[in-house]
Image (cartoon, rainbow, N blue to C red; front, top):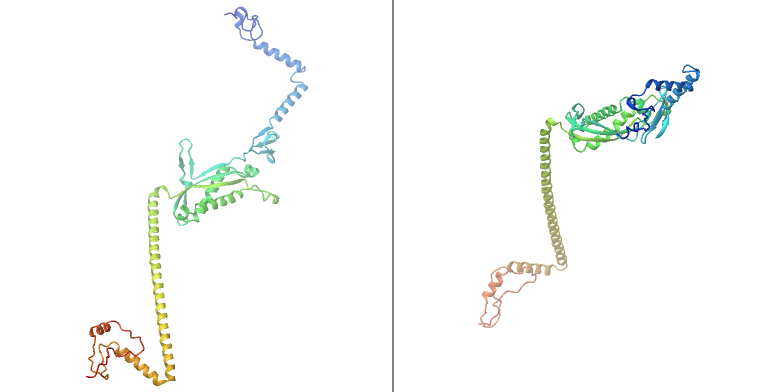
Length: 391
Protein backbone atom coordinates (compact mmCIF):
# COMPACT_ATOMS: atom_id res chain seq x y z
CA UNK A 1 0.00 0.00 0.00
CA UNK A 2 0.96 3.62 -0.44
CA UNK A 3 1.11 4.41 3.27
CA UNK A 4 3.46 1.49 3.90
CA UNK A 5 6.10 3.30 1.90
CA UNK A 6 5.81 6.23 4.28
CA UNK A 7 6.30 4.15 7.36
CA UNK A 8 2.67 3.65 8.39
CA UNK A 9 -0.41 5.81 8.83
CA UNK A 10 1.27 8.07 11.40
CA UNK A 11 3.99 9.12 8.95
CA UNK A 12 7.71 9.01 9.23
CA UNK A 13 7.71 5.35 10.03
CA UNK A 14 6.45 6.01 13.56
CA UNK A 15 4.19 3.52 15.30
CA UNK A 16 1.25 4.57 17.52
CA UNK A 17 3.52 4.36 20.56
CA UNK A 18 6.13 6.75 19.08
CA UNK A 19 8.66 4.13 18.01
CA UNK A 20 10.06 3.39 14.64
CA UNK A 21 7.97 1.04 12.64
CA UNK A 22 10.34 0.35 9.77
CA UNK A 23 11.05 -3.11 8.52
CA UNK A 24 9.71 -6.13 10.27
CA UNK A 25 9.67 -4.44 13.74
CA UNK A 26 6.79 -2.10 12.86
CA UNK A 27 4.18 -4.66 13.89
CA UNK A 28 5.57 -5.39 17.38
CA UNK A 29 3.29 -4.77 20.47
CA UNK A 30 4.05 -1.89 22.89
CA UNK A 31 6.47 -2.41 25.74
CA UNK A 32 4.21 -2.34 28.87
CA UNK A 33 7.11 -2.62 31.27
CA UNK A 34 8.53 0.57 29.89
CA UNK A 35 5.19 2.32 30.26
CA UNK A 36 4.88 1.20 33.91
CA UNK A 37 8.40 2.42 34.60
CA UNK A 38 7.60 5.83 33.14
CA UNK A 39 4.47 6.09 35.37
CA UNK A 40 6.48 5.24 38.46
CA UNK A 41 8.98 7.89 37.55
CA UNK A 42 6.28 10.53 37.29
CA UNK A 43 4.77 9.46 40.66
CA UNK A 44 8.17 9.71 42.31
CA UNK A 45 8.57 13.22 40.97
CA UNK A 46 5.24 14.17 42.59
CA UNK A 47 5.95 12.30 45.82
CA UNK A 48 9.65 12.50 46.49
CA UNK A 49 9.31 10.36 49.60
CA UNK A 50 7.21 7.64 47.95
CA UNK A 51 3.77 6.31 48.98
CA UNK A 52 4.89 5.79 52.51
CA UNK A 53 5.65 9.43 53.17
CA UNK A 54 3.35 11.68 55.17
CA UNK A 55 2.55 13.91 52.21
CA UNK A 56 1.43 10.93 50.17
CA UNK A 57 -0.81 9.62 52.92
CA UNK A 58 -2.34 13.05 53.40
CA UNK A 59 -3.12 13.44 49.72
CA UNK A 60 -4.59 9.96 49.56
CA UNK A 61 -6.76 10.60 52.63
CA UNK A 62 -7.91 13.97 51.29
CA UNK A 63 -8.80 12.45 47.94
CA UNK A 64 -10.76 9.68 49.65
CA UNK A 65 -12.67 12.18 51.82
CA UNK A 66 -13.50 14.31 48.77
CA UNK A 67 -14.73 11.29 46.84
CA UNK A 68 -16.81 10.20 49.86
CA UNK A 69 -18.37 13.64 50.22
CA UNK A 70 -19.14 13.81 46.50
CA UNK A 71 -21.25 10.67 46.85
CA UNK A 72 -23.61 12.69 49.06
CA UNK A 73 -25.00 14.66 46.11
CA UNK A 74 -28.36 13.48 44.76
CA UNK A 75 -31.05 14.80 42.43
CA UNK A 76 -34.71 15.30 43.41
CA UNK A 77 -36.87 15.15 40.27
CA UNK A 78 -40.12 17.14 39.82
CA UNK A 79 -42.95 15.47 41.72
CA UNK A 80 -40.55 13.96 44.24
CA UNK A 81 -39.59 14.96 47.77
CA UNK A 82 -36.08 14.52 49.12
CA UNK A 83 -35.77 13.07 52.61
CA UNK A 84 -32.48 13.54 54.47
CA UNK A 85 -31.44 10.97 57.05
CA UNK A 86 -28.70 11.25 59.67
CA UNK A 87 -27.66 8.20 61.68
CA UNK A 88 -30.93 6.51 60.70
CA UNK A 89 -33.17 9.38 61.88
CA UNK A 90 -35.34 11.73 59.85
CA UNK A 91 -33.78 15.19 59.52
CA UNK A 92 -35.55 17.24 56.84
CA UNK A 93 -37.31 17.29 53.50
CA UNK A 94 -36.01 18.94 50.34
CA UNK A 95 -37.60 20.30 47.19
CA UNK A 96 -36.76 19.22 43.60
CA UNK A 97 -33.25 20.02 42.40
CA UNK A 98 -29.63 19.08 43.15
CA UNK A 99 -29.28 18.38 46.85
CA UNK A 100 -26.61 17.10 49.24
CA UNK A 101 -26.67 15.13 52.44
CA UNK A 102 -24.11 13.25 54.47
CA UNK A 103 -23.19 10.08 52.58
CA UNK A 104 -23.38 6.54 53.89
CA UNK A 105 -22.76 5.42 56.60
CA UNK A 106 -23.39 8.73 58.37
CA UNK A 107 -26.37 9.78 56.33
CA UNK A 108 -28.73 8.57 53.65
CA UNK A 109 -31.53 9.96 51.49
CA UNK A 110 -34.82 8.90 49.87
CA UNK A 111 -36.76 10.44 46.99
CA UNK A 112 -40.39 9.19 47.12
CA UNK A 113 -42.75 10.30 44.34
CA UNK A 114 -45.63 12.25 45.90
CA UNK A 115 -47.28 13.32 42.61
CA UNK A 116 -47.99 9.86 41.18
CA UNK A 117 -51.34 8.18 41.76
CA UNK A 118 -50.69 4.54 42.54
CA UNK A 119 -53.17 1.80 41.61
CA UNK A 120 -54.16 -1.21 43.68
CA UNK A 121 -56.56 -3.93 42.50
CA UNK A 122 -58.75 -5.88 44.91
CA UNK A 123 -60.40 -9.13 43.81
CA UNK A 124 -58.60 -9.40 40.48
CA UNK A 125 -55.30 -8.73 38.74
CA UNK A 126 -54.99 -7.06 35.36
CA UNK A 127 -52.89 -9.15 32.98
CA UNK A 128 -51.05 -6.75 30.67
CA UNK A 129 -49.74 -9.46 28.36
CA UNK A 130 -53.08 -11.16 27.70
CA UNK A 131 -55.20 -8.02 28.04
CA UNK A 132 -57.68 -9.76 30.36
CA UNK A 133 -58.27 -9.84 34.09
CA UNK A 134 -57.41 -12.73 36.38
CA UNK A 135 -59.91 -13.36 39.14
CA UNK A 136 -58.67 -13.75 42.73
CA UNK A 137 -61.52 -15.58 44.52
CA UNK A 138 -59.95 -15.36 47.97
CA UNK A 139 -60.27 -11.58 47.73
CA UNK A 140 -63.40 -11.10 45.59
CA UNK A 141 -65.89 -13.48 47.25
CA UNK A 142 -67.62 -11.79 50.20
CA UNK A 143 -70.62 -12.52 52.43
CA UNK A 144 -73.56 -10.09 52.49
CA UNK A 145 -75.77 -9.20 55.42
CA UNK A 146 -78.49 -11.65 54.33
CA UNK A 147 -75.94 -14.51 54.08
CA UNK A 148 -75.48 -14.52 50.30
CA UNK A 149 -72.14 -14.75 48.51
CA UNK A 150 -71.26 -11.86 46.23
CA UNK A 151 -68.36 -11.29 43.82
CA UNK A 152 -66.77 -7.86 44.29
CA UNK A 153 -63.91 -6.27 42.34
CA UNK A 154 -62.52 -2.84 43.12
CA UNK A 155 -59.79 -0.48 41.96
CA UNK A 156 -58.13 1.92 44.42
CA UNK A 157 -56.13 5.02 43.47
CA UNK A 158 -53.90 6.40 46.24
CA UNK A 159 -50.97 8.75 46.67
CA UNK A 160 -48.38 9.59 49.32
CA UNK A 161 -49.60 12.21 51.76
CA UNK A 162 -47.08 12.24 54.62
CA UNK A 163 -43.57 11.26 53.53
CA UNK A 164 -42.20 10.57 57.00
CA UNK A 165 -45.15 8.35 57.95
CA UNK A 166 -44.99 6.64 54.57
CA UNK A 167 -41.29 5.74 54.78
CA UNK A 168 -41.11 4.71 58.40
CA UNK A 169 -44.67 3.91 59.46
CA UNK A 170 -45.60 1.36 56.77
CA UNK A 171 -43.58 -1.67 55.80
CA UNK A 172 -45.28 -2.52 52.45
CA UNK A 173 -47.58 0.33 51.38
CA UNK A 174 -49.19 -1.46 48.42
CA UNK A 175 -50.03 -4.56 50.45
CA UNK A 176 -51.25 -2.42 53.34
CA UNK A 177 -53.61 -0.48 51.05
CA UNK A 178 -54.95 -3.66 49.44
CA UNK A 179 -55.56 -5.43 52.75
CA UNK A 180 -57.13 -2.34 54.30
CA UNK A 181 -59.53 -1.74 51.40
CA UNK A 182 -60.47 -5.42 51.30
CA UNK A 183 -61.25 -5.39 55.02
CA UNK A 184 -63.33 -2.22 54.66
CA UNK A 185 -65.29 -3.68 51.73
CA UNK A 186 -66.00 -6.88 53.64
CA UNK A 187 -67.35 -4.92 56.59
CA UNK A 188 -69.61 -2.68 54.48
CA UNK A 189 -70.83 -5.58 52.31
CA UNK A 190 -71.52 -7.58 55.47
CA UNK A 191 -73.86 -4.81 56.62
CA UNK A 192 -75.76 -4.66 53.29
CA UNK A 193 -78.25 -6.97 51.63
CA UNK A 194 -77.48 -8.73 48.37
CA UNK A 195 -80.14 -6.84 46.38
CA UNK A 196 -79.01 -3.48 47.75
CA UNK A 197 -75.36 -4.15 46.91
CA UNK A 198 -75.95 -5.08 43.27
CA UNK A 199 -78.48 -2.32 42.51
CA UNK A 200 -78.72 1.13 43.99
CA UNK A 201 -76.23 0.58 46.81
CA UNK A 202 -73.00 0.63 44.79
CA UNK A 203 -72.37 4.35 45.20
CA UNK A 204 -73.08 4.23 48.92
CA UNK A 205 -70.79 1.22 49.38
CA UNK A 206 -67.94 2.98 47.55
CA UNK A 207 -68.19 6.06 49.76
CA UNK A 208 -68.48 4.16 53.05
CA UNK A 209 -65.67 1.74 52.19
CA UNK A 210 -63.32 4.56 51.18
CA UNK A 211 -64.01 6.49 54.40
CA UNK A 212 -63.51 3.38 56.55
CA UNK A 213 -60.30 2.39 54.75
CA UNK A 214 -58.95 5.95 55.13
CA UNK A 215 -59.61 5.86 58.86
CA UNK A 216 -57.78 2.55 59.14
CA UNK A 217 -54.79 3.82 57.14
CA UNK A 218 -54.60 6.99 59.23
CA UNK A 219 -54.25 4.83 62.33
CA UNK A 220 -50.96 3.41 61.01
CA UNK A 221 -48.70 6.02 62.65
CA UNK A 222 -45.30 6.33 64.18
CA UNK A 223 -45.12 7.25 67.88
CA UNK A 224 -45.49 11.02 67.95
CA UNK A 225 -45.55 13.80 70.45
CA UNK A 226 -48.81 15.49 71.36
CA UNK A 227 -47.88 18.48 69.19
CA UNK A 228 -47.80 16.22 66.10
CA UNK A 229 -51.01 14.31 66.70
CA UNK A 230 -52.85 16.32 64.05
CA UNK A 231 -50.37 15.38 61.32
CA UNK A 232 -52.02 13.64 58.36
CA UNK A 233 -51.68 9.95 57.64
CA UNK A 234 -49.12 8.41 55.33
CA UNK A 235 -51.49 7.61 52.45
CA UNK A 236 -54.56 9.29 51.01
CA UNK A 237 -57.13 7.22 49.08
CA UNK A 238 -58.30 9.47 46.28
CA UNK A 239 -60.74 7.07 44.62
CA UNK A 240 -62.32 3.70 45.28
CA UNK A 241 -64.28 2.34 42.33
CA UNK A 242 -66.27 -0.90 42.27
CA UNK A 243 -65.60 -2.60 38.94
CA UNK A 244 -67.95 -5.54 39.51
CA UNK A 245 -70.64 -6.34 42.06
CA UNK A 246 -72.45 -9.48 40.97
CA UNK A 247 -73.31 -13.03 41.89
CA UNK A 248 -70.53 -15.64 41.61
CA UNK A 249 -70.01 -17.08 38.14
CA UNK A 250 -71.12 -20.56 39.29
CA UNK A 251 -74.67 -19.33 40.05
CA UNK A 252 -74.94 -16.39 37.66
CA UNK A 253 -77.51 -18.14 35.41
CA UNK A 254 -79.78 -19.03 38.32
CA UNK A 255 -79.36 -15.53 39.70
CA UNK A 256 -80.44 -14.03 36.37
CA UNK A 257 -83.52 -16.26 36.37
CA UNK A 258 -84.36 -15.02 39.84
CA UNK A 259 -83.87 -11.43 38.72
CA UNK A 260 -86.16 -12.00 35.72
CA UNK A 261 -88.83 -13.57 37.93
CA UNK A 262 -88.53 -10.64 40.32
CA UNK A 263 -88.91 -8.19 37.44
CA UNK A 264 -92.00 -10.08 36.18
CA UNK A 265 -93.45 -9.99 39.67
CA UNK A 266 -92.91 -6.25 39.87
CA UNK A 267 -94.54 -5.80 36.45
CA UNK A 268 -97.57 -7.86 37.52
CA UNK A 269 -97.86 -5.88 40.74
CA UNK A 270 -97.71 -2.62 38.82
CA UNK A 271 -100.38 -3.78 36.35
CA UNK A 272 -102.63 -4.89 39.21
CA UNK A 273 -102.13 -1.62 41.01
CA UNK A 274 -102.98 0.29 37.83
CA UNK A 275 -106.20 -1.75 37.44
CA UNK A 276 -107.10 -1.17 41.09
CA UNK A 277 -106.55 2.55 40.66
CA UNK A 278 -108.73 2.60 37.53
CA UNK A 279 -111.62 0.68 39.11
CA UNK A 280 -111.36 2.72 42.31
CA UNK A 281 -111.48 6.01 40.45
CA UNK A 282 -114.49 4.86 38.40
CA UNK A 283 -116.30 3.73 41.57
CA UNK A 284 -115.51 7.03 43.24
CA UNK A 285 -116.88 8.89 40.22
CA UNK A 286 -120.09 6.85 40.20
CA UNK A 287 -120.52 7.30 43.94
CA UNK A 288 -120.06 11.05 43.59
CA UNK A 289 -122.61 11.12 40.77
CA UNK A 290 -125.17 9.17 42.83
CA UNK A 291 -124.64 11.46 45.80
CA UNK A 292 -125.13 14.53 43.62
CA UNK A 293 -128.33 13.08 42.13
CA UNK A 294 -129.66 12.22 45.60
CA UNK A 295 -128.88 15.71 46.80
CA UNK A 296 -130.68 17.19 43.78
CA UNK A 297 -133.72 14.93 44.35
CA UNK A 298 -133.72 15.89 47.99
CA UNK A 299 -133.58 19.58 47.16
CA UNK A 300 -136.41 19.12 44.63
CA UNK A 301 -138.68 17.36 47.12
CA UNK A 302 -137.93 19.86 49.84
CA UNK A 303 -138.72 22.72 47.48
CA UNK A 304 -142.03 21.08 46.42
CA UNK A 305 -142.98 20.40 50.03
CA UNK A 306 -142.15 23.95 50.98
CA UNK A 307 -144.24 25.23 48.05
CA UNK A 308 -147.22 23.02 49.01
CA UNK A 309 -146.95 24.13 52.61
CA UNK A 310 -146.79 27.76 51.56
CA UNK A 311 -149.78 27.26 49.28
CA UNK A 312 -151.76 25.62 52.06
CA UNK A 313 -150.88 28.43 54.42
CA UNK A 314 -152.02 31.03 51.90
CA UNK A 315 -155.31 29.18 51.33
CA UNK A 316 -155.82 28.83 55.03
CA UNK A 317 -155.30 32.55 55.52
CA UNK A 318 -157.95 33.25 52.90
CA UNK A 319 -160.25 30.72 54.50
CA UNK A 320 -160.07 32.48 57.83
CA UNK A 321 -161.08 35.72 56.22
CA UNK A 322 -164.16 34.37 54.34
CA UNK A 323 -164.91 30.71 55.03
CA UNK A 324 -168.01 30.44 52.81
CA UNK A 325 -166.40 31.78 49.72
CA UNK A 326 -163.30 29.72 50.28
CA UNK A 327 -165.33 26.55 50.79
CA UNK A 328 -167.28 27.23 47.62
CA UNK A 329 -164.10 27.82 45.66
CA UNK A 330 -162.48 24.69 47.02
CA UNK A 331 -165.56 22.70 46.11
CA UNK A 332 -165.60 24.05 42.59
CA UNK A 333 -161.91 23.47 42.07
CA UNK A 334 -162.23 19.93 43.37
CA UNK A 335 -165.22 19.15 41.16
CA UNK A 336 -163.45 20.68 38.18
CA UNK A 337 -160.53 18.44 38.78
CA UNK A 338 -162.75 15.37 39.09
CA UNK A 339 -165.23 16.03 36.26
CA UNK A 340 -162.65 17.52 33.94
CA UNK A 341 -161.41 14.10 32.87
CA UNK A 342 -164.77 12.41 32.48
CA UNK A 343 -166.26 11.51 29.02
CA UNK A 344 -169.68 12.94 29.77
CA UNK A 345 -171.57 15.81 28.23
CA UNK A 346 -174.15 17.78 30.18
CA UNK A 347 -176.94 19.63 28.35
CA UNK A 348 -178.73 22.41 30.08
CA UNK A 349 -182.43 22.08 29.17
CA UNK A 350 -183.53 25.15 31.02
CA UNK A 351 -183.09 27.31 27.97
CA UNK A 352 -186.18 28.49 26.05
CA UNK A 353 -186.79 27.97 22.40
CA UNK A 354 -187.41 25.05 20.15
CA UNK A 355 -183.99 24.83 18.50
CA UNK A 356 -182.35 21.41 18.35
CA UNK A 357 -178.95 21.49 20.02
CA UNK A 358 -175.96 20.55 17.83
CA UNK A 359 -173.36 18.54 19.53
CA UNK A 360 -170.03 18.10 17.68
CA UNK A 361 -169.29 14.83 19.42
CA UNK A 362 -166.24 13.98 17.31
CA UNK A 363 -164.54 17.24 18.27
CA UNK A 364 -165.56 16.94 21.89
CA UNK A 365 -164.25 13.38 22.15
CA UNK A 366 -161.05 14.34 20.38
CA UNK A 367 -160.47 17.19 22.79
CA UNK A 368 -161.22 14.90 25.71
CA UNK A 369 -158.65 12.36 24.55
CA UNK A 370 -155.99 15.05 24.72
CA UNK A 371 -154.43 15.75 28.14
CA UNK A 372 -156.72 18.27 29.80
CA UNK A 373 -155.29 21.09 31.86
CA UNK A 374 -156.45 20.04 35.31
CA UNK A 375 -154.39 22.74 36.95
CA UNK A 376 -156.92 25.38 35.98
CA UNK A 377 -158.56 26.47 39.19
CA UNK A 378 -161.37 28.37 37.49
CA UNK A 379 -164.57 26.31 37.24
CA UNK A 380 -165.15 25.64 33.55
CA UNK A 381 -168.65 25.83 32.21
CA UNK A 382 -170.32 22.65 31.09
CA UNK A 383 -169.01 21.71 27.65
CA UNK A 384 -171.42 21.73 24.81
CA UNK A 385 -174.28 23.31 26.79
CA UNK A 386 -176.38 24.89 24.18
CA UNK A 387 -179.79 26.25 24.94
CA UNK A 388 -182.12 25.50 22.17
CA UNK A 389 -185.43 26.93 21.35
CA UNK A 390 -188.28 25.59 23.32
CA UNK A 391 -190.29 23.06 21.51
